[in-house]
Length: 340
Image 1 (cartoon, helix red, strand yellow):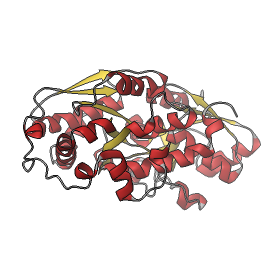
Image 2 (cartoon, one colour):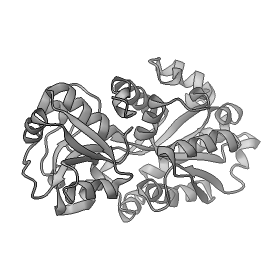
Image 3 (tube, one colour):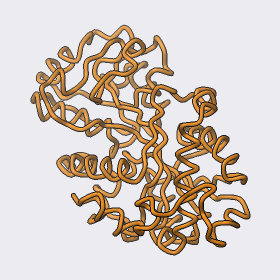
Image 4 (tube, rainbow, N blue to C red):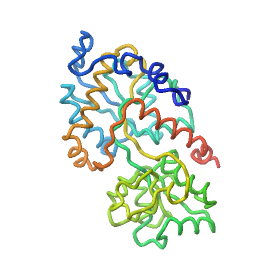
């Protein structure tokens, strides 16, 4: 996983994306003189999605592409490949899609990067990169509204008496890593149970089938008064009013873990970046304009997203997150793979 090792910003950008495109030496959107870029795009963009149609990633994709299409003057055509926690989509993208900058991948960086920690893909990870982050949705711990567990300390105390069943959307997920980190810090015992998707994970807590659940906080906010949040895995509880003023992991337990997020982002073949640097520069520039466009927040909210979590990120931000989540995930690899 050399693409995620610590490197200087310049080293990473040069090695993975080509210095001209990623270091800003090519002017973009209106400033590109190359004939290659002048005609790009001349047909629709194709996007491989690692989840089913109608899910959170799909809604986020449709929201951002509804703005981005106007900057690129073309449409986006998604193709869905749910299965194996996103693994199928990446294998299809890297093995069957042309590296021409017309083909992109859209996914949840956190869960999908953790996939590679648990089991390496068939393709070389250095041949793929993320370049455009849409949002940062922090994970959290929550219970049903009338649960006897009123605080995170109540859960920890019970977890020291017996192993608690924890609902999670998938084993290799930032929320799973978060609760395992709580266990590591406090000595509480947690048994992760994958429930396949956010709706099922919320239901696991609400019905009492699980002692509690962990998930992205945007999905928990959408569940409304049926649940109560006890802990947030972020530097700050940005949505405190809608998340029961729950404390953050680092503040409450004195830890120093990075934010655990389901950060949705676009990825691309490194070969496409190197072969078509002008095209890639245009994609970068117009994507940034789209996420920062005033029209995007209402579109994201309409798609059931949390506008407060919109957070543009480029290559460097994506790289930093990749490093942090894979390093932390490696500590809990056996538990995330169900072998512990």
